[in-house]
Amino acid sequence: MTGVRIRLVLPHGSQEYRSGLAEELGMLVAPVVELEVLGLSHAVERIDSAYHQVLVAPHLVEEVARAEREGCDAVAVDCPGDAVLRALKEAVRIPVVGVAEAGILYALALGDRFSVLSSLPETARMIEESIRARGLRERLASVRAVSVPGAEQGNHDRAAKALLAAARQAIAEDGADVVVLGHAGTPSLARGLAAELPVPVVDPAPAAIELARSLVSMGIVQSKVCFPQPRAKDGGQLPGRAWR
Image (tube, rainbow, N blue to C red):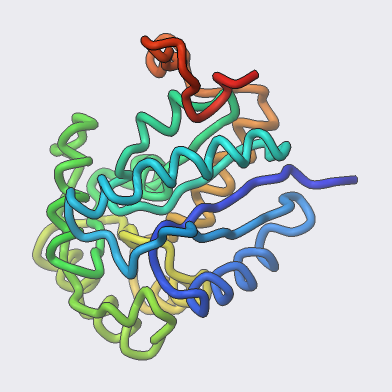
């Protein structure tokens, strides 16, 4: 039996980071999910500003549209704060799930108040803005910045120590009863943190893949009332399904 085909798109990070993540996630979700982990041809080292979001937005739309054309059942996108997620959901008619979005949704089911651990102060602000926009500020205990750029590049030892310290502060000082990683790390990193903490730790990348898989299994896609298919006013082509 063929698994659900899901493409995880990473608009940032190195090839080494993507390869390590693909290997760990692939072992975790197989054979239920046929997982593809891809970067962008115009990827950036990290997305820590609105400027970077604008730079990668057109390429993200193109990549999500290509995933639909090539027969993927769903797409997950890892972007701090789920940048341009609305546009991606408008562009196609297959489920599109944001990694940060999925991590938050799972946290809501696991406790009353959650904290997000961000790898940079700049992305912490983006994540908090995204949570406020979803009307979830009352459920947010904190967003704590952990200054470990290496956390996105496979430096697990350095990342684990900094993340563990931040998580303990979030629990003791902010009242968090769930901890969410603010980016797609690796499952082994999340498991190591969970073993040291008294609360659940949500790794958002597996959460996004599982959420996407469940939407495909139930035959559900994002609402086209909320995320309508865009139309080209000049009659030209748009990324997505407009060429069909």
